[in-house]
Length: 164
Image (cartoon, rainbow, N blue to C red; front, side, top):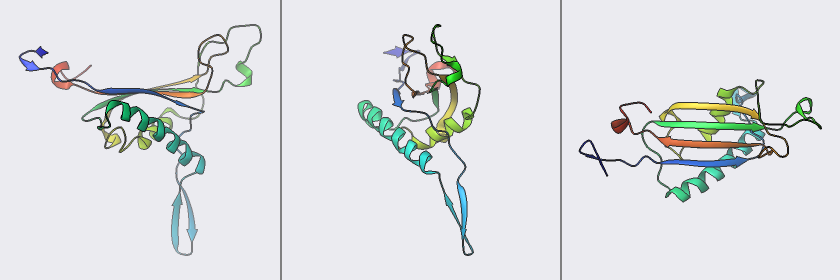
C-alpha cells in the first residue's frame, strides 16, 4: 500500500476487557520503622494491577508480543456495580454515567502503571487519553458485569498530519 509515495505504516493497537470491579490508584502509605520511612501500596490496588497485567499480557501475546511504540492513544471505559439507589424493578436499567469517586485520573493511573513493560515501555507515551466511568446496565441491556474495557493504539503522525 502506498500513500503519498511513501509505504503506508501499519498502525497497531489492542482491545481487551478486564473483568471485575475497577480499582483506582491510591497514594502509597508511609510507615516509620525507627529512623527509616517505609512506603507501601494498598494490597487491593496491588492485586488488581496484577489482575489487569494478566489480561494485558494475553492481549499482547495475541498481537505478537512487541511493545506499542511512539505516541499512544488510550481509551478506557470503567463499568462499576450499579448501586441500590439505581436499581429498579419495573423500569429498564441502561448504562448510566458515574459522577462520583473514584476520580478518573486515579483510575487511569492504576491502569497505565500496570501496563508498563507489557503494552508499552513507559506510560509517558500516552499522548491522548479518554476515560469513561459508568454504572453497569441492568438485565436485558447488555453486559451487566463490572469490568474495564481498554483500547490502546499507536498514532501514525506521518500519515495523519499529526492528529487523528
